[in-house]
Image (cartoon, rainbow, N blue to C red):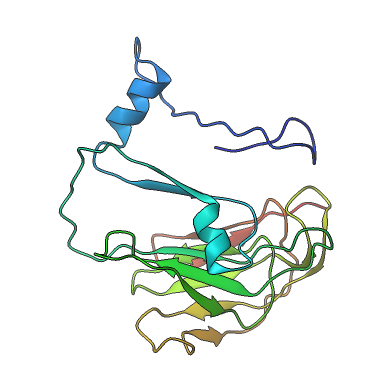
Length: 192
C-alpha cells in the first residue's frame, strides 16, 4: 500500500491485495481477506497524539466482531516535522478495542525518522534503524540513528524504553528488520 507519483514526489495512495482470486474485484477481495481483521493505516507526521488520530484510517467490515484473547495495541513511533524535517522522538499507542480507546504519547530515547519495528515473542518491540534528520524518501535523510531500543509495554508508562547496544551500519530508507524463526533479528537494506 502507499506510494508516490514519482521519486520523492506527491503521494499516490493505493491499496492492492495479492493474490486476487479470479473473478473477484478489489473491493470484494478486501472484504474476503479482512473479514476477521481490522487494519489500521497511519501516515504523515506524529507530532502529537492528536496527529496520530488525524492520520489514521481503519479498514474493517462493520459486521466483524471477533473475540480476541489478547489486547491488541497499535504502536506508531518516529517521524519528522514538516518544513525543516527534524526527526521526532514520539511514540503513540492505543488499544483500539478498549471500551474508551485513547492515544498515549511516550518519548523514545532518541529522535528517529523511518525507524523499523519488530514484535518479539515475549511481547516486547525491537526498534532500530532510521535517521535523526530528514524525511522518508530516497536520499532525503541524514545522520543515521544507530540506537537499538527495546520497548516493553508491561513496564510503567514513562519507563518502557531501554537502550541496547548501538548498531554499526547505517540503515535508513528501504531498510528492514525481521524476526527469524530461531529468534535472531535480521537487519538489512538502505539507500546509498
